[in-house]
Length: 424
Image (cartoon, rainbow, N blue to C red; front, side, top):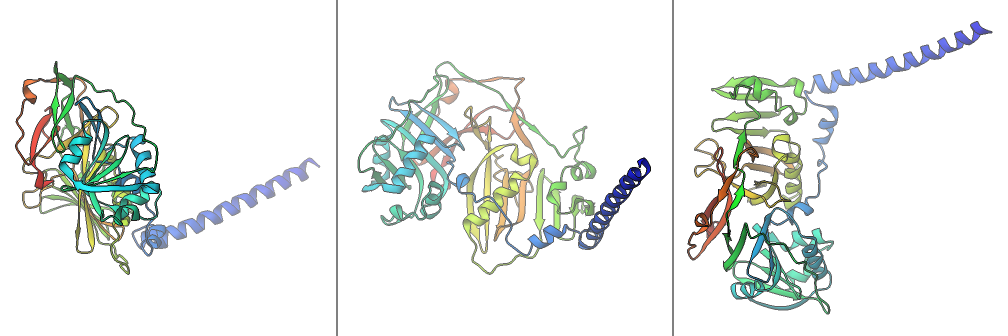
């Protein structure tokens, strides 16, 4: 009886082993045909025939580049790349059941709004109403477009109304009854802002504001700080469908890594450039949100870029492609970080410089070109600098915009920068 039981167990074990070997054989055959022959995963091959899955991007596109908080006492706080829930709730209600009040000149209407409790969303690009509304659970932006409001670049939320603004006009909406809740915000006297003109906010400090200097590290360099072929190749496998098939080499003194449809180069001036040459289906016209979602998915898959907080700084339509440029927020959004300033000449080669740390070109949801500064930017917590009251005593000319941010030089602190309004 004991021998019969043992023989039964052995037969079962043999059956399991045979099944496992059969599955392994099928898998290895698939690898031979679909990976080694085509230089890519079979699933990636199929995905190339269809639109790739991506996040829809609506939550990210309506996140303001900068948000201003005010309690009505003339002092303001600001954050970059964050939403305020009470403002989002007010916007949702206006888009759902708001009543149009009037349209007027932007400057005096906003100046009046800034005298009381206010949350001001600012966008560094032109926000389209038909893109904005779906992020707040509306199928269309008709409540805005029916009043001639097709695009804007700022939204002011007040207890009594919500105001949409472009550079010249302001559209005011209110609820049929009731008010919006706007919390009382903490404004730190160590660093706050005064509004002197339309959307120009001057930083102020009573006793000096302490902060950490900027630190720059290059993850593509070796332990000695040198950028070499092997050190770059070790950090870029996520850019390739089948990393095992990479071909790293020096091409004209430029570090170049390629597969059958992808080229990655480390360019002079410490810029990493990715190009994809895979065929793309283009039956439909370019769609802004499809392309934006594709850009987001790509940057989120790059560990050396996605470890930064970032926001959309500008975009453009170039033929059949959208080009998106993202800026980093240094210091984190929760504690009130500030934007990164590119060097005056930009990053990278002089004939094609980068003026934002990330630039992504997308064609029908597929990233065809990706450029970024190779550096990781963060704060050096081992050192501290002080922004003095005198350092902030800067005159602002008419038509100029003031921004406080970190310059892209190693070990440097905050910089006050004036920019012509028409350049934004």
